[in-house]
Amino acid sequence: MQDGDLADQMETTADALVRARHMIGRRVICQVSVVDLTLNALLCGGHDLLVGAPGLAKTRLVEALGTVMGLDANRIQFTPDLMPSDILGAEVLETGSDGSRTFKFIEGPVFCQLLMADEITRASPRTQSALLQAMQEKRVTIAGAERILDKPFHVLATQNPIEQEGTYPLPEAQLDRFLLQIDVDYPTRDAEREILLATTGTEDAEAEPVFDAAGLIAAQQLIRRMPVGETVIEQILSLVRSARPGTPDAAENVTAAVAWGPGPRAAQSLMLAVRARALMDGRLAPSGDDVVALAHPILVHRMSLGFAARAEGQTLAAVIERLVAMTLDREAAA
Image (cartoon, rainbow, N blue to C red):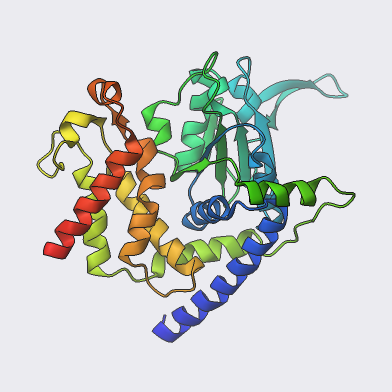
C-alpha cells in the first residue's frame, strides 16, 4: 500500500471516529475520557474493564457503543449463582416428532460481538474463567467441540470498587487480558447539571449507527499499519520494563514497592493504544504524549503493590506517575 493511500484511509477513519464520539456523547454525557478510552480499546481489538460506582452510565455506554459501532450486543448480569453454561451455552437433549433423540447446542450470550459483563467480580472464579478462552482466542470449547465467536468480539466488564463483600477479585491472568482499565469517576457539578437536564425530560437523545462490524475490523487493521517512531518504541519498552520488580531494568524503589509487574502483553497493548489515540486525534503517527496519557490505564491493572507499600499508603497511580517521569528523563538524557 502506498503512503498516500494509507494517509487517506486514516483521514477517512478519523472523520468517522469524530462522528462516532459525537453520537456516543449524546447518550453518555460529560464522560469524554471514558468514551475515548473505550473506543481506543475497540480500535485495538481489545477488552475494557470499567471500574466505577453504580449509576455512572457504564451500562448506557455499552448500549450506545453497540448502536454506534453497529455491533450485536449482549449483557450478562454476573451473580454468585451464575454458571459457566449461562455464559457459553449448553447442549440439550431434544426429542423429535418420530421419537428420536438428539443433542442440540443452545448458544449462550457470549455469542455476540459486544458483551457486557456487568459486575464481573460477583460471579465465582469458575464462572469468571469461562471468559478466559473467549477473550484471548475468540473461541470457546464446549462439550469437546471448539466454536468460533463472531468477529469482532469485545468484552466490556464492569466492576464496583465500593462493595467488596461477596465478591471474587479477578485473577491476574484474567486482568491481563483486559487491554485497558478505565476508571469512571463522579461527574463535576456542571457536568451533573447537564446530565440532570438531558436525562429527566420527556425526550432522550438517541444514538445512530456510524460504523458496522466490517468497518470496525477495517479500522483495527488500519491501526496496525500505522508507523511508530523509534523514540516512541523505546519509551514503551523502557516504561514497561522499569515496572517489573527484581529485574535488571527495574526502576529505583520498584522492587521494594511492587509485588508483581506487567508482562509483554502490556507493551503490546500500549503499542496499539498509542496508535489508536493518534488516529482518534487525526494524527498520522503517535508521540510520547500518547505514551504518557495511556500509561495508567494500560499498567494499573497489571501491577500490584507489596504489603509494605500499601501499609505506607502508596498508590499504584503514584508509582506509575513516577515511572513515567523517570522514563521521560531517561529518554531525554539519551
